[in-house]
Amino acid sequence: MFDAFRRKSPTATWREDLTALMVLDLDRFELNGVGFGGEVDGLRFLGPSESRAFDYPPKGLQLDVDSSGLLEGLVVALRDGVYLGVTPPRNVKQFAGRIRLNGRDLAPHEFRSESEFVRAWGEPYWRDVDDDETLLFFEFERGEVQVELTPDGVPQVALVTPEPLMADLAQRQAYRVTAAWPPPGLASAS
Image (cartoon, rainbow, N blue to C red):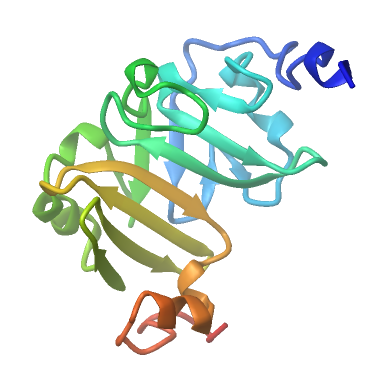
């Protein structure tokens, strides 16, 4: 029973490379050359995580890794002090890298409002609003990015996944999506 508490983090032996720039490449759907379904060992430059999970609050990054060590998704903080996995928001810093989109490298600090975000990224496939947040769904051939905005329209986190939530008809119905699927430009419907 106590083995779970004694287990070391899978990143315990990783050594941080402070010279490495993190690049979330949405043109290729990869982080520093490691694509979704790729071995997370290719991200050893991140160094040891702060927990047994793959959480990097000072870098504004959380990795979703399966039991085989394959990258399944990730979350980046678009500003300081947001909820990111198991880390208290006070410890989370803005993503310390670049986001590549349509051949352009963008920094998270460039997105201070929904309008600035949409100006840089283009129109989302769907926009969902409730009392607590606004979600923007951006669909790509290789996956989906869900951007969470505060009630006052400030981008706070982006969830990047190769498995689009909006590809699921039941999810589109739950979100009351009226836009056609697949969005223009995507190769095939799911």
